[in-house]
Every structure is written in structure tokens, then in C-alpha cells.
Length: 401
Ligand SMILES: [Ca+2]
Image (cartoon, rainbow, N blue to C red; front, top):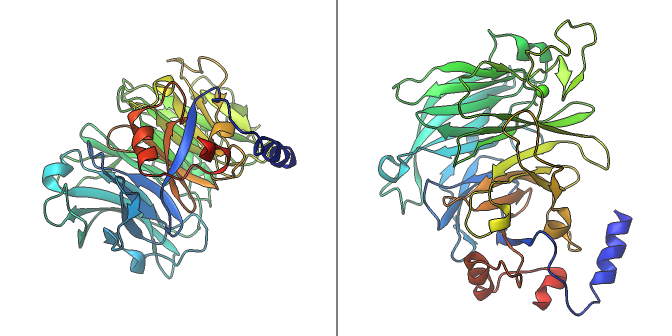
């Protein structure tokens, strides 16, 4: 950290800044939020981003003006435990594939209860009025799935749709990690719901996960990327090909990453367990992987097809390319310097989010940032030009441009 500060002080006196190697930067698109933890957009909608505040509100960001609408799109805060910076609250949002006509969207959250403490809830709501311009949802809730639990951690947090199915990642629950290997328990699983059913019921899609807080589908290939938060030693990224028919076992708690963590278990090292394509240790202040997205936007050609991810405690960011099998094409590229270079803008990342056109956003525990090409680089894209015209804030040395 000290070295970073010293380096920042040094470069801040230089009159010009060379374009950095990977040509990425961030621009803030929303502030004044309360503990944002995720964001999403309806399919194809480019002008708006829907940001989740942990306490139970969905806020709409007008991307043309980088303003947050004052009235929440949805407010379910009365059902949620007041924020205490734990793992509870409103964590997941996905819009139905036909949102433009149906106005339907889904949320995943932890409802507050007296005893047991919490109820995991997957619910659907519907926008009021024409969906494409609606700024407020009908408060009528349709609960699809609920699950009571006593502990406050390891809830997963993401919901995503692929084809006719909604996928929900549920952590191991934080009280009995062996449930992740128990086919009869929903904990430690990715569950799948058939949205064609009027009353969808969960089926286990994958097991052996500890806390798959953020996962995503590659919007171009349908491949599944999971950031599974580890325990004491290793953070892992698992990838499942779109052609998979499910039933994979990602190993927890028999293995953490690719390492045996239950020495007496005969399944340790067994070929039936699916190892991560990439893992990193808890060194250099790293603590919890924040799974992201494969970049499929138009503005940053050099990032196209790369999977972007982050670490919560260290605020560091990387991208990798999955090799189509059990590993990665080459060592991941670290983007921390470009995205946090000398300005300390990116705080604790709680999510990487995907806009309606495949553009990516970083959500930290305070603000939301759009990932853009480095201003002034040869790869300057339309998004950055629009941003400059709108006098976007380029903190630190980048202001000179
Ligand atoms: Ca694993």
C-alpha cells in the first residue's frame, strides 16, 4: 500500500500520462447510493442501470446524465434486516427475457425473521406501466422460493437467466458446510427453475459450492462462470461449458480450490470433482473473489472475450481467458493499476455488473463506475467520447487529458 501511495505521489506531478498497457479506465456513473451491491439492466436497454442497495431498494441510474432517480424502482426494505455490513439484504436481480413486454423481473434477498434469523427468498415483481420507461414497480410480490436459515452468511447472491431457466446460487449456509455435498439439501448448490412453469420449483443444477456470491453467463456462448468464495486459503473461479447437462460437483468442502481440505475424505483428489480453472491465495490482502462477466461490449476491443473479476478486500481486478477445458489460456492480466491508478477510486468491489448492451460496470460499496477505454488512447470509443462531453469525472492524473 505504501509503495502504491508513493508511486501515486510521483506520477501526480508529471504533466502527461502515457496510455497504460491495457487501455482501461473507470468513470463514475452513480453516487449517493446506500451500500450498493449489484446492478443489472433489462435485455437491450442501454440507457438505464438498475442498482441494488443492500438495505432493499432498487435505484434507477439514468446513464445519459449519470443521475440516480430519487424514487426507488422497488423498495422492500421493510422486509430486510437493517444494514449492518454483513452478507444479508437485497443481493440479486435479473430481468425476464421478455421484460420489454411483460415488465417482469426477479429479485433474490434475505428477509428478516425473528427465529430462525433469515429467509432466503426468490420473488418476482412487475413494472408499472410501459416497461421500457417504467420508473416504479408494482409492490405486489410473487414468492417463488423460500428457505429458512439461522446463520447470517454464505447466501450466494446472484440470480441469472439462460434460456427458459433461472439459476440461483445458494451458499453452503455458513453452519454446516457438508450440506454442499448433500443432494437433498439446497445449500451449497446452484439451483435451477423452469420459468415456463407457472409455479417453478428448484432442481439442483450443481453442487459442492461454498459461497458462489457472484456468477454469470457469457452472453455470447452461454458458458457459466462462478466466483466461489473460499475459506482460509483459496479463491476460485469455476467455468462450466454451455453444453453441460448439469450435475457437476465443484468439490466443497472436500476440496478448497484444487487442494484437499478434508484429508480423511476418500473423494479428495477424485476425478469426479471439478477443479477451478483458476485460483488465487489469500496473500497480499486478498480475501474474497467477486465473480464478474465475460466482456462482450463494443467499446473496448482488447477486452472482448475476456472474463473480468475482482477481489473484495484488496480491490484488485484481473481478466482471464478460459481455455475451453480445465484451465486458462495464460496468466490473468491484472488491471488494478489502470482501474485504481493513483486515485483510490475503486473501494470495496461488491459486484461487476453487465449493462443491456454488454457494457460492464464496477459496483463498489458506495458508487457505480462504467468500464471505459482509457481516454486518449487509440482505442477511444464512443462511450468515452460521450463521457468526456458530459464532463465525466476523471480523477487524479487523468484529468489532465
Ligand atoms: Ca471448488
